[in-house]
Length: 362
Length: 127
Image (cartoon, rainbow over the protein chains, first blue to last red):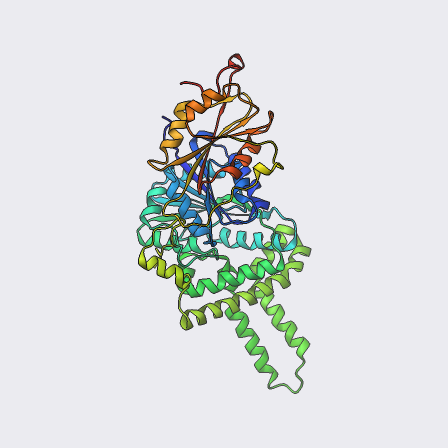
C-alpha cells in the first residue's frame, strides 16, 4: 500500500478551459515527486468540456452538476476528497512556478506557528494587453507593500494544513458564490481560532486570465461591493490591508475632499474656469496616487504609467461606488445568501449530490 | 465492452448524465493503459478502496487491442473497456475515458511502462 500523500492540490474550474491546461501543466511541473501529491480538479458545472480537459492531467476529477456554486463550494468538495496533510488551493487561471508548491510545503514544515501560506501575484501577467498588465501590477503592488502575517488565504494560490482548514469550517460556500473574497473570510476565522496565515513576498504566481475593460470593471465592482456588504470595510482593512480594494480606495477620501474644496471655491470666484479646476482635481488625485504611479513607471516605463493613469482613476471611481453600494445593500437587504430554494433545502437538511451549500462564516 | 475508435466517432460522445437527484455521488475509476503499460491488481484495489464501500464503475481505457482480453475481463469483473487505436497517447486516453465515465467523482489511475523484457506480459501484472 502506498504511503499517504503529503499534499493535495485542489483546482476549482468553471469554463476556464483556455487557462486550465496551462495551470495544470504548471502544477505538474512542480519540483515535487509526482507520488508526493495528488491533483484534484473540481469542475463547477462547466459547459465547455473543462472536466474532460482536466482528466488529461488530474488524479481525480469531480463533476458538479446543476447550478453553479462558486469556487468556495468547489474547493470544499475537493477538500472533502483530499488525502494530503496539506491542501493547496490553486485557481484555474493561476500559474505556479516550479518551486512554489515545494516552498509552501517547506514553509509550513519550518514554521509550525503558521497554518497557511499565501502566494502573491507576479508583476507580469501572461496576457500582454494593457488591462491584464495593469491588474497584475495593482495586485502585486498591494501584496508587496505589506507582507508578513495576514488574514487572507489568497484565492489564486494558498496552502493550508488540512486539520486547520477542517476545524475552521472550510470555506463559506453560503455567501461567497461568485466574488473572490472567500479567502479573507476564511482567514478571519482562522485568526479567531488563534491560527495564522503567512503572506509570502517570494512566492509568486502568474495570472493567466486575460482581462479587458469590462471584466476588470466587474471584478472591481464585485470586490468592493462585497467588502462592505459581507465582510465589513473597517474590519477587513485592519485584517487584510493588502486587498486590492484598499489599494484602490486608500486615496478616495482625500480625493473627495479635494474635489469638494475646488468645487466650493468655484462658488466664490467670478468665473467658473472649469478646465483649470478639473486639471487641479486630476493633478491632485494623481499626486495622492503617486506611489502607485511611480511603481507603474518603474515596472513598465513612463509611457505605460501614463497610459494606465485614466484606467486607475476609473477603477478608483468604481471602487468608491461599489463600496457605497455594498453599504447600502447591507443595510437595505442584508448580507448575501443563496436563493430561497437552497435555503429551504439547507433548513430541511436534504441529502443530495451535489450537496446543498453550507454556511460556515460569521 | 465499449470499443472506441477516435475522438470523432459517435461512441465517444459525452455520456448523457441523467438529471435525477441522488443522495450520494456516483464514483468512477478509470484505468489508463497506453501501449506497453500495465497496472498491478494492488494498485487497482487501492484505487477502489479509496472510495470505501461505495459502488465504483470501473472503466479500463487501453490503446490498441489487448491480447489478453479474456483475462482482463476476469480480473476486473464488470468493468467497461474502452479500446482506442494503438498509439493513442495517455492524455488522449484519459480524455476519451472521461467522456465515457458516468461518475460524479472520477479517479484516474495510470499504468506504468512495461519493461522491454516483459513486452508480452499481461496488462494486469501480479505484484
